Length: 378
Image (tube, rainbow, N blue to C red):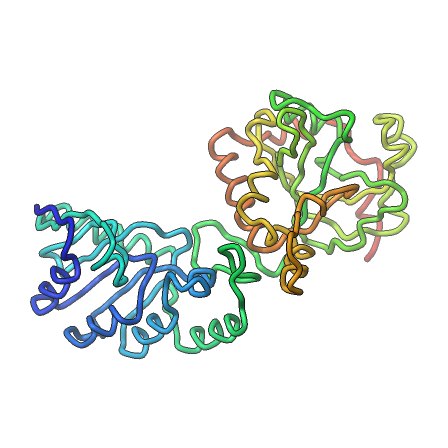
């Protein structure tokens, strides 16, 4: 094993003449570097795992033209979301594990650190790791996709270190349906926020959100379509925020059917003021307290104007000083962008895996709707 603190570029080029199969994992890639490698290596034997986040290309930290060049020369290129590792594998004889991306900065000018390895068992483990990442992203990049992404990037301006409306096409272990719309439904009022130690099961019992989300008379949720996903969030006191504690699949609002019955109002008197229903099915809730939920402020901090379609459109229209928190004022629910929804979905899955899920036995013990929804036809 050798420790390298500089001259990574030279070490990489020195290994190529003795290599038949080259495998590289690098989040960022620059065209200048891959062109240099191609001049000394047969690209039909080159596999690259990188990122397909269009933000990276817009910010010029990675090169879409570089990836297209690799594909045109015969390389197999795959994209994995949130990739951060950097590994260079030369057949089964050697490998480099490093902090350096496949860029001029990573290989030449930046302060980087890594090790050159010849241990056979470690190299085999790196091959296994590479193959595991390929299983996440089995589809190779094509030149057609590169051209389509280049069209999306045309005219995009960078503002405050971000570029607008740019998706991440990298693969992920979690399944996310881009054909659906995603919303957050807010529970509670500003004068009855709960602390983070408030049990989620108590909120489910209070709101009966396992079968419907309540709305006031003049705010029917007509925007939501059948099959859309509804995240559920409770107003919290310390911090002054919203804790997202579950999700469910929405049923399209139907006039007449989706209203609290007299019996349901007796069960929960607050439904007198919030009698309109957005019915849901297949609910999933974190089996913990609000502290185990995902704070909306974390989502806003990460995505800023790209949190909601409304704020993203204002950004696209060249508006400045956008404050996404204002989009929440007096709102019973809000629509998410696919970027922020996918992040939230992943965070909720992580919380469910860590804390556990409220079981069906508890949900079935709660009051159920008195409306025979099956009797209604679309």
